[in-house]
Length: 243
Image 1 (cartoon, rainbow, N blue to C red):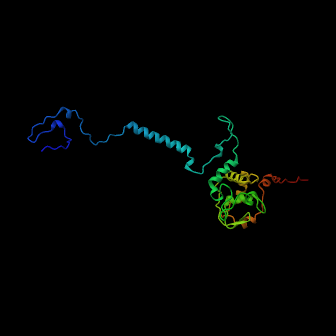
Image 2 (cartoon, helix red, strand yellow):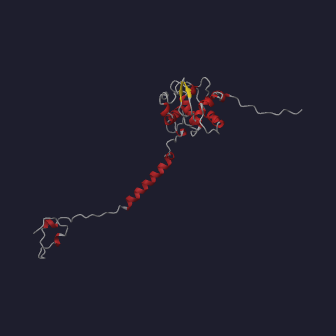
């Protein structure tokens, strides 16, 4: 019996059951042999090109990733001057930088509206802690940002009892920028806070490791950032001339 199952053998070598060589039609001889499973090596040039591209991409990321940190931002590299190439960069607006820092770190609790969350997180809009008033001074809000706050706190006649984390890991100019932003946003109209003033408050409280309580802050005399900046430096002691 002849089988109809295709064979992978060379048709020119097929024989009958009696051992006779079978004639092979010309149409069969023109057919290509059955394909076989085999792997071809990747060309060396393509492999080299792949590694060169990976190397270039690695250098680019190393130079432009900011150390792969999400909080990296250098205002010195930003210009809103609109002068184009070769133009002198205008000074960076601290409110622009402050809004960015606020959006990254503060908006979850205090919200984009500055109204906070009732019963949980206090508002910043119209807050005496932000714009000053009663016993609260500029030194209090700077101290709160540097070291955080815990325990009950009264804001605009309401009591809140949630902890605020310290943000002393931010640079002086970053804290100054975010304070300047919230003191001039949502209808607030308070003077900006300077980097120098933040530094002075950081130096005064450098040894502090715990968050503030309202009671502690209330015991601290209120201070205006503007008045502190305008205060004249103490005169140097002079020796009286000998007679």
